[in-house]
Amino acid sequence: MPVSFRNYSQTSPERPNVGTLAMLLTQAGNVVESVFNQLGTPPPARNQQLQSLYERMRSFEIQPRQDKQVDLTIRQGQVAIEEQLVEHAETALRQAVYVQFIHDKQMPPQSTPAPTAAYEHYLQDMITALMLANRHLAMLEVLKNLEGKHYGVRAAQGGHAKNKQPSSKMTSQLIRTMVKGMLYNKPVLANSNKTEVADTMATRIYKANREFEMLDITNIDDLKHEVRELLFDFANIGKRSNRRQTDRERLGHILRHSFPSRDTEESRQMDVDAARTTGRIEGVRTALALQLKQRFGALPRSAIETLETTGDMDQLQIYLERLTEARSVNDVIQNAQ
Image (cartoon, rainbow, N blue to C red):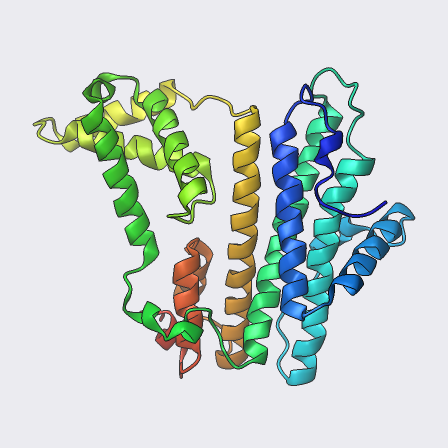
């Protein structure tokens, strides 16, 4: 059968998570298109390669689950880079096709009346495959930049990113502004259950970000906790209660109130978005760390910790840009000792 990444038309409207399945297949198709564009593969060869991968999965000749063990190390030298381009391109394609394969061959039949344990399991497998596909796509893009002696997308655009403030700070400022604005527009929220309000606000922010792509948000649960902390901060402005009492009240609320479970169609779609973003960030972060080690040897602990906690694509691109002229790790990650 043709590998179209649009085969969700077979799914009936009554089937649970139909929107999530559609998103997964669409995003997998986007990965495939990006890989082929990076390699300059002509359309006839694309279809043939996808069909071959699909058939080899069906015959168990290749097992995409084993791709989790693939080494992400960047090896220097023109020949080594060319070999790695092929490796990461093939892995990204394998994982993207695997998303389609799971949908076609492993998901429970349409007659299943409600989500089963097997259904949920395979849905998570599809999300994981999408994340891995994006991780290797990001590695492929970094390697293509290395091949052309460019380390970052922004460097090719004139290097203007050097003068930008770190996006992580801008993200926090924007989230704070949005929360403050929602409180201003609906003051009654200030006296409502902060966990419930944070859940609603974070979901609104996440959905708006999915449409307008303002921020790199990889985890809605982390966003909910951040919004709840902001709600406490705003509530305590102007109060004369001491810090210890305030912290005690905050901790008491957190212990008594948990965020609602997210076993819904909408939450699944958020997971798909997060898988795409997280995979790309992990790929770029891994490529950057390995390139730093290749050039400067063992990295100081502070540099490793900074990389591990950097979840913002713009900031990672700034590091990649700095790498072009860096003479030390500190030139890339400032204050790395």
